[in-house]
Image 1 (cartoon, rainbow, N blue to C red):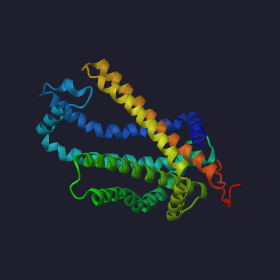
Image 2: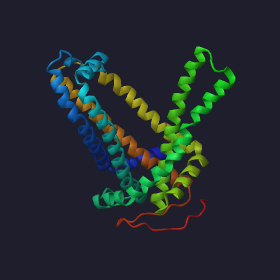
Image 3: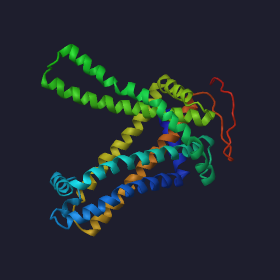
Image 4: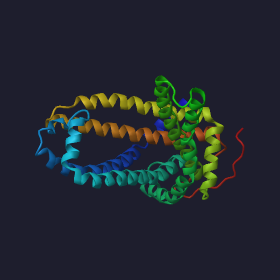
Length: 306
């Protein structure tokens, strides 16, 4: 069932390649918005430094320390930019997700009017859904402290060094799982909101929690599989990008192309996740309503799946 949902999601993305470009261009815009001021600062800094050749390849801590030392006055301003731009990017992605879920739910081809109309329609609801989900995320995030308490109960306040080492890795794993679970619940809550045209986001959130944990092996398995695919892609990408360290125009151009290919792949994975989760929802949950090409939803009573 998980693999079938993933295959269905991939086939839907192949039929709607414009989706990928819309999400990619939005990501590129916010990336440029953040990097353009940094480019000006970096250009002035490299003019007074012999470390410009270290811009290619892996991050060099000597370069980073010298850059902060020589540009301490702009660090605070750039720090604010690093907070605002990713937040704006995340909100815009949330906005786009309304159009994406509506198109997948209605099995529609990409139509600007239908896509952007539904993006506007669901953005306010999705923002309220995110606010409702904050307590859920806080509870999931705090699960790591249960592990800390158990270790302190078993090994005392001063455990052995190897216990402390593995405790750190367990915490990292629990944090990652908490983010994965919260994202999974949020996705299925959005699916419920789109399929039923639900306006009360607390109801969609509760439904998302029930569905996610009621079919935990399938929902978590699909989310984990998509996460693993993304991690493998990152593992392949990083060594290749780090190896392109020669300071010449051709290598910089090749690195730029490689980065854009990787970003397009990431957007493809994100949209595949949306389509696959909706297909899994349809297989496991009750019969969903459909969406017409005019953007109006046909409200139907849910009946138990047979």
